[in-house]
Length: 206
Image (tube, rainbow, N blue to C red; front, side, top):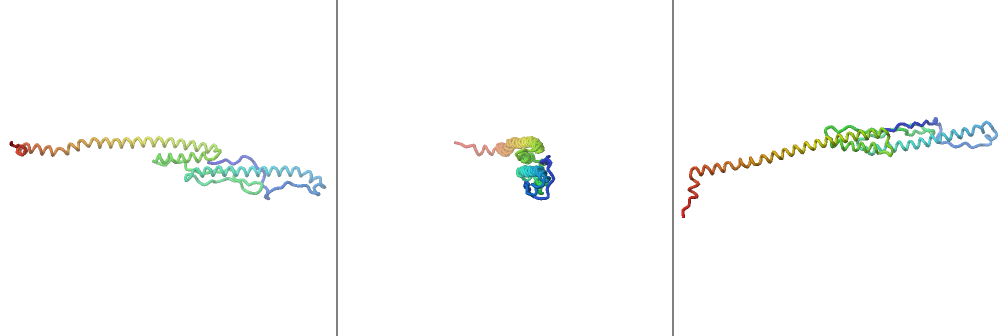
């Protein structure tokens, strides 16, 4: 996610920090050539101060933008990096920046991929005014999230079908196990009946 450098061109940087409007002096009043140069000097000074104000404002916006990306991206986002321009006061001001973020899906884990893409989307749209590249990254993360949801749904259906098949197989196996368990008892009764031992036991006389 990056912010392109400002397209505004700034006047050349000065060798001293801070500027003050020039004031006339007695020497200036007595020197017509110096008096004529004063308005031009004041105009240049105003331009330099305006350029400095614009750089300061740009620096604030860039840093706030990139820090919003980094904060929302959590462990998937890197540290902000900036491009700088030297101002009329000799200082460096951020005029562009970027934050790297991991947008690769998690192999073999659609649930983790879905969670990750939701974080990426939030990070891309975190600044107050997302850039065109930010919006593109958010759209790509949304597509990845949709694919992860589909894969997760298929995975859940397969797991549900497998569990249902196992349950059905267990239920079908229960009657056959019960029948197998009653077989020896019936056979024993038949053998006792055949050899007459059962009848001698139950044949009672009044």
